[in-house]
Image (spheres, rainbow, N blue to C red):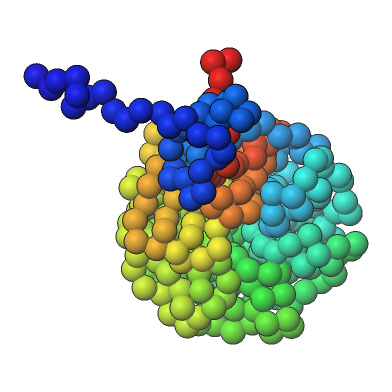
Length: 332
């Protein structure tokens, strides 16, 4: 059995001032201020409730950041409702002009509040899958250049709207999953390398020069993860569990954050983070949901709307784990 001298630990130092270069977790007593102090305690990652969008969205597509984002369209075919859009300013949602098409069900999009594009969609009559692109410039919508891969729904897309990377998706009326990829440069699109696994509802982060595509439906949901180098796709570490129609954030192939979605057992609330080598579990959403809008980075994110399975208006913001500065210790 260990003796007291072994297990008692170190004495708390009694100092007249905070020490320079204190180590993370170091504790001391500051006799000048009369406070017990600790350096660099890790704050846990967590999701917190945020103001809800103005309408119930079963996975409207979106883009932006936790302080400036846009939602457009809707999941499924629901007439004019699939053309509605709204904008987030960090504190609330405001309705903006609708997309100039009433057939945006199952659309997909990416960008910022000043350079956003809504693409494809059109599940149900009159168009079972389209190559349409509508660009938002911060004040209005214009018709953009149509993409050059097959007309589709539920594709993966990332990057600024005018310089988007588009991959995968489902053909007209879910008639076969796609493995195609194309890049946009303003008014033109270029077809590039093929995904190894044809799928829709995949989660894509990054830019057309460096991106990652994770999960999705093949069907069913898959574990596949691939990175893109500007011309071709390469295999990455597989997901710890298969999932699709997920909220996602991140900056590229070494930084992706996935939350919520659908697994074989239904809607989920768990989240996972990728660092370019391995996946790790992270804080779970407060509300189980799939088909949701996701924005931001792996350290600061926003999720909005979604279904669980009923379309929702709830939103949540995410703060990653961080080291707090020197703090006082109290018993309260």
